[in-house]
Image (cartoon, rainbow, N blue to C red; front, top):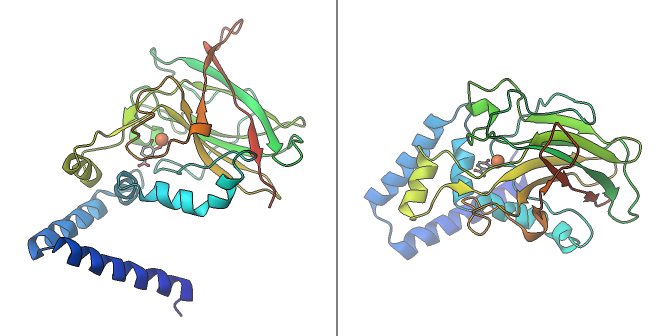
Length: 266
Ligand code: DHB
Ligand code: FE
């Protein structure tokens, strides 16, 4: 039995598709090109490449639904950490690591290792939250996530951590660098049609969860990165821009990033 909500969503989509075709006076040839693009995206997709999502992302659709879904949370943004899009490179099977562990294995020569740490708090009471989980994932300096790159070990640059009894988390990661989203498929073709570049600013992905609180899917962005003003997938929000500072007296890291997270109660 169809859900009333899905029926409403589908009917509304049809209405707007028809309006779009009428407005632009879409021809049969142009419509066929669109069909070919959808089929191409399907053919390109594997469990390592989610081309459908990439296509949506260059169209700004994932960012828009993020904004719509978390509008309430954003209105409370002066108290809770803002969300950002999930993107296509999350994996559900991140291994648990211990506080202070590294997520960088076979660290490339040009990488700048960063000690990232902070406190997860209840946004309302400001009390630290013990036992919150954080998923973290990032691309390597060649712009590739581990599942896109045969040379990286499984689960390189990703992990799952828990906050300690003081609500603190910590890990070693790399300072992220800007890179292009995969542009050899339909998402790239759309960018080309629109005269747009495929680059994303340097970012780290996070998902933070704790019982009794709204989960947060987000990304943080290096304030010194290029492309903060023209992210190819429109994910940047001012409150998510962070500063990497030089780290002193730590042979394991050149940079430090302190980042506290505030969670809204359910
Ligand atoms: C997209 C998101 C990412 O975080 C990324 O690294 C590459 C692509 C995307 O939204 O398509
Ligand atoms: Fe990413």
